[in-house]
Length: 416
Image (cartoon, rainbow, N blue to C red):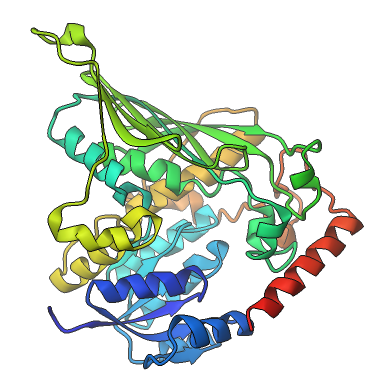
């Protein structure tokens, strides 16, 4: 294998896992940066004990380390500034989802990537699970015909107990991010399987459920669910459901094409390929069910996270660095995947009106969004800015806050 790519990880939660996966594709994990001391200590003692890794609390000092690349896995609302700093420090970047938090940040991000000579790879992993890879193969071979309609759902409910393991308090992004924003796990597979991009989005929201004790008993200010109806650049429609808290944990992805349909879901992980018998002479079997496998050269992917999908993010990132090639999920696709969540929330707050999804490949388009810092962060709220819920500012009861503090304290103590 080629000389290892020296990689550092910013964000020791999700990032520590990605760092371990990176080592499986020939990278060498040499540094980890994490501002939260207990988490950094846990990773040092348990995840990478005995390995030659340098640990940092300060990101600027971390970037001074002898690194070739950085995996940016800090808070999802703070990726852009971390990416831009890493590029300025002459590092390649693998960035976790979301790509940016505002449309102004999208302009900053794309121009920083274009100005650098470094690889930017967006770590949207769902398109790389075995089912999506097989659907990509079938579609690109022409077996399914033209893409007409798709559905992609990512449903991830939680409890106050589980939230306390992920959230430091009410100001943490997971406690308030609108349900449209974390949308790349839904839109990503649509774009990558069908090689299309969104050009328009209509957003709709299922409001905060005051009758759900798992909501009212915690500190979340988020609504329950959302639907984003995306018009793609081939005129197909894609109904995506970003990170919803419905009682149906998992994925459901479906593509209806003019020669058949492909789908899988949380209740049936096997791929279903459906064809109408009347389209063939002699007629073919209507439904074929099978569980796709990774190609032989990627068998070790199955040992990594998210059904093997994380492996491919690291693999194609390293491949682009070594070859100097265009990243499979580049900055333009990253912005396409992320912007529908921001614009979809704007649409929902205006009754679901259609909004254009700008293509930042066109430099003239960027000027409209250069100073667009519209965002739902409660800490930045001012006139003209939205609250995280369509219902406004959701209150957190004293009892819920007290219970959260107890759960959080127990979790942090358990890190030692």
